[in-house]
Length: 52
Image (cartoon, rainbow, N blue to C red):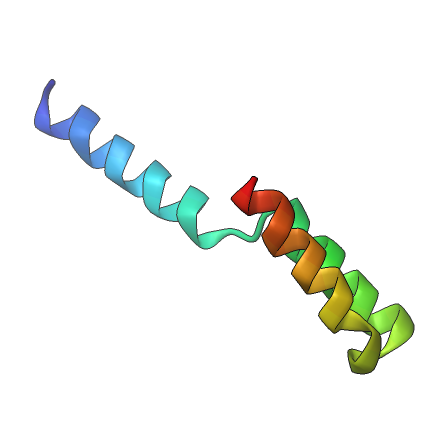
């Protein structure tokens, strides 16, 4: 692997790791639509789903 290819890979990995995924987008949408009190059960279900 050349230095240029390694640098391109590192930059791409950094951008991909820093961008929010669909679960974060769903969480933000839930907070905006229903408020912060309704989010805890949603977060617990997300964490349980990711753990399984």
